[in-house]
Length: 108
Image 1 (cartoon, helix red, strand yellow):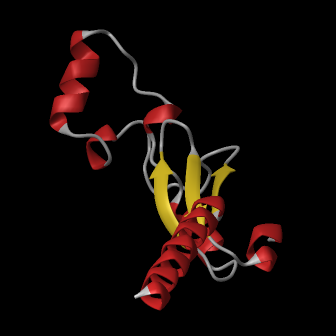
Image 2 (cartoon, one colour):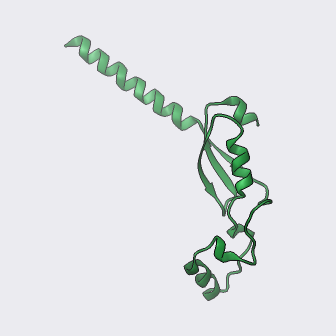
Image 3 (cartoon, helix red, strand yellow):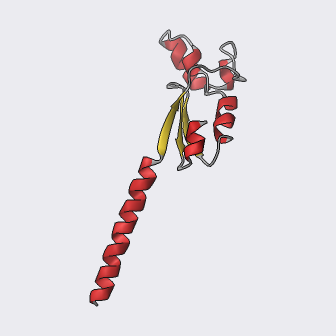
């Protein structure tokens, strides 16, 4: 019974350490522009919902570059950098959240 409790304790500690490690392997890549996007400001219906477009019109909010999605070319380039996973892309912040433990991928 004592051996079982010790094994359970070690297992819990190992799980906590692995969760901590997973949290430390997430990185935000801040992009400087949205060059190479297939979308344009003149055709917002390709990247904004009709509801979003109408809401912007209603409140006199201009459609600008912050509304453009993150360039797919940039996302593809990031994914090709090594062993990493793209978790999310934010068009308004123009950044990509990745997860990796590959130091070489981070350098690229």
